[in-house]
Structure formats: structure tokens, C-alpha cells
Image (cartoon, rainbow, N blue to C red; front, side, top):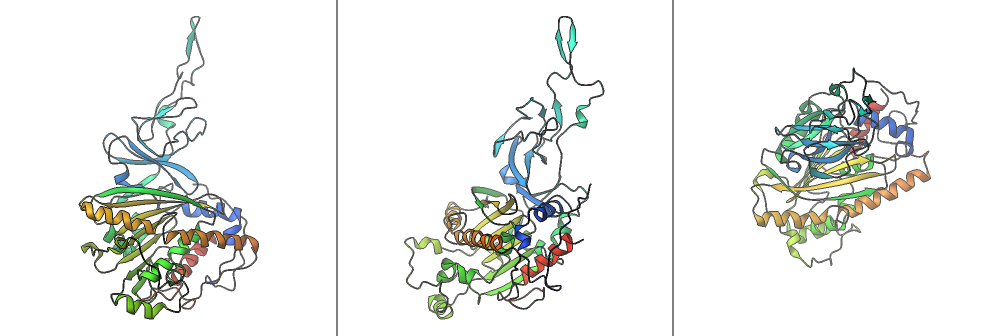
Length: 420
């Protein structure tokens, strides 16, 4: 593997990873260095759920960083991930998002590949006969087995599929670490998943801002009118913040209060986003049913660096996939799912609560907007810095939400990798 050199110097205040230079969000050369070090080397990245490709021949086109990849299931049921770049002339040959095929064919010159990514056919490989002679053809020493698609290393756990361009990457379980793995296995506990639907949006902001947003327990009870008014997420909820040993992955764990509306109002009347008069036309949005697998918490949001967010917010469960598009935008793809043993009533409940999230969600629309406005501020004043010092400057797990420790942990790790 070739290591690229990027001559970039960031100006950090002393040794504080709690003060992040705006340049970290605005510099295109820095962004390319991030892609190499976080998406293409030494990291596992999410590509999809096994339930998205249940049958032989099923495939899904997705992305790791800014590189298009294909997740496929071959005729024997094995899962593969390979780059969506033809070995002949480099074309991104697959245009469909999902489908079922017996083989992949590049439309440019019709080189075709198996569901494992192996080259199996080259038109005119042995030339074309004309007037008693053979014209053209590939050289005699051409071997199809040497010209397959770029195959990635694959790991699957609990029905979730990860891949890496780096075949020397550490095992997935070591990458996640025991604390995060505990909450991962809580959600993906072996039950078969069912796909409920997708939503996708392009957010005009740096990709790290979404990782920050879901590592930030400071804002939900302040920004999100829906959360604070209906008591689903508040700063005084029973809560924990957990990180892996290196600070790159995190889990925000919260248990909804049971004190009723009067207790909620007493806690949040000074918060401007609280709207006591707000009423629901459909009260079923608050039709929340405790599930045994929760084991207590009513919400767990996990950030798996660099590209994945796993959400359980009461009965709504989803993956959120971050796909960078330059330094100042990213595609954000939601996959809403349930479980094969769900009743029809529970499936409808999950779908109903999913309206809180996604591009037009009652909650998530706020996040997309503030990320866009943040990026505008960074571009306006690139020599400045952000401040993430709520709760101090240390990086540590906590038993409360009044802190930005998870953001500090992420940037401590970011600096460790980027400055190596």
C-alpha cells in the first residue's frame, strides 16, 4: 500500500483537541488526506445490511468515502464487496442502486464479471476473423484471473456488513472495542432484519459535522423542539456516554423520564425550543412500547467512525451512512429496518416513529440545517476555531449529558491519525 504525503499544517491552540480549527472543515487538500487515512486505510466502513441482499444475485451500490463500491451475494450465498471501477478502462459500470444480476457487465466494452468480482469474459479476446486472418485480440499472455475487480476485505456481524480497502486492517471486533461492541450486539442480537425503507439527502457541510452532531448530547434538548416538548430526550434524563479506548467510536445512552408532563414542563420552561402549547394531531407518534431487547435504555445512538451511525430512538431503528462529497458536502443515507418477528402493529409503529428522522423528519431536519449554517460560518472565517469545552477539556466516559467529551475524544483520535 502506498502512503501519500500531504503537506498540511493545522494551527491548534496549545495541545487542545477541544478547539478545532475551522480549516479542518474547509481545506480540500486536508479532506483528501482524511479520505486516505480514515476511509481507505486501517478502518472498517459500513456498506449495508445482509437483509438488503437476501438472495443469490442481489446487489447494492454504495460508497466508502468517495469511492463507489458494490455489495453482492454470489450463487453460493457468500457476500462480496468490490470497487465499482472496470478493470479495463476505469468506468463506473454499475448505475443501479439495487438489483439482481447473474453477472456484472461494463456497458463501455462489455467486459463482464462474476458476482465475486472475477473477470470472466472479454469481447474479441482472441481477435476477429476476416479474410482468412485473425485481427487484433488480447496478447497471448493475457490472463482473466489477473484483471478482476478490486476486492475489499469483508466482515459481517449481526447482519451488518463492513468492508475495508486495507486487507491488513485489524479484526472488526478489535476495531469496535468491547464497550461499543456491547451496545452493537444489543441492537444486532442475531434476529433476522427486515428492510422498511430508505431516505437520502445531500447535506452541504463537512462529513465530520454529522459524526460530531451525534456525539453531541448538548444540543438535542435545546435545538429540537420535538424532543424537548414531548420529553423523548432531555439533559436530565438518566444517561451514559461511552467511548472505545481510542475515542473514535461512541454511544450515547439515554432513558426517557417517567415523571409525566408536569415534571417535564418544570425542567424545560426556560428552554426557548420548548413549546408547551404544541399538540399532536396524531398521538400515535408517542405510542411507545417497551421492548425486551432494550434492557433499559429508551435511546442509544452509536457513532462508528468514520462513516456509520446506528440509531435506536424508542421503537425506531435505522442505520445512517455518511458518504463524503468533497470537503463541504456529504450524502446521508438512512436505512430504516425492523425485525422478522415483529408484529404488523410493531412494524407500523416503527414506520410511524421513523417520521422523526430522515431529511424531513420532525427532529433530523433541524440537524441538516444547522450543519449547513455551520459550514457557511467556517468558510466565512477559516482562520478561526470551534470550542468544545462543555464539561471541561478531558476525554472520559460520563454518567450525564452535560458535556462535549465525545467530540473531544473524536478529535484527539483524528489528530493522532492525521498528524502521524
